[in-house]
Length: 100
Length: 100
DNA sequence: TAGATACTTGCATGCTTGTGCAAGTATCCA
DNA sequence: TGGATACTTGCACAAGCATGCAAGTATCTA
View (cartoon, rainbow over the protein chains, first blue to last red):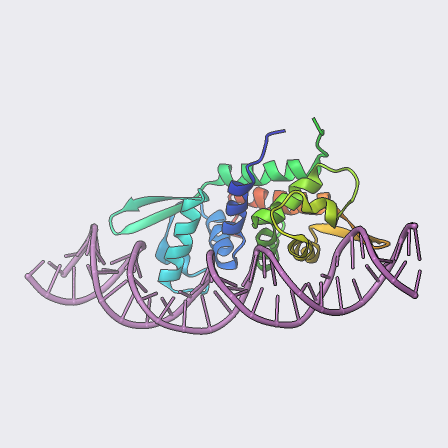
């Protein structure tokens, strides 16, 4: 079983553990193309500056990626990375470890 | 795909997204028998009252279960539940949704 | 019964975090 | 060039959260 870096994992989970940020992630789940910040504003109850800040946190944690296009920033979900982190923890939780 | 209740999931992730709480969870991962609070104190850098409060949060979120035995409380990880929640989100994140 | 052990809880404190507003930067287009 | 659009950032503020200490409750044991 892979070792888990608790600090890193905790900050990823913390990033996902805020309602508006999780809403942003779920919104991006449902899109097969990158979305800009204005579009993403519609799914959560904060103003544009709040969304900007939430997206910054998600970017820093590797949850989303940004691509600049003119005056827009297009965000896409790092599906494989986030899913892998979650599954890694799920695996660790479900299987009793060897004391090794 | 199962619908996800964002509020509930966010509070579960928030509960897991604190370093000391995640340490407690990882500690419980490695135990095949319930552990009491004193024993769990060793794995995180807070005093007994802090551990007590963290375990309370984890209990309220369904992450762990308590069983009282005399003056001790024995905690065990709700492995199936937590793993399922994490995998459910991972599935949702990895598969592009139908607009349906 | 008295003291020890296991855990919880009230209180105070300091740090972090989410938020809106207003101002700022960058880019587009007429 | 000048205004509109897209996004970010500084500031202020309120609320939330983690923490230790000290006191409290519950249970055990000598």
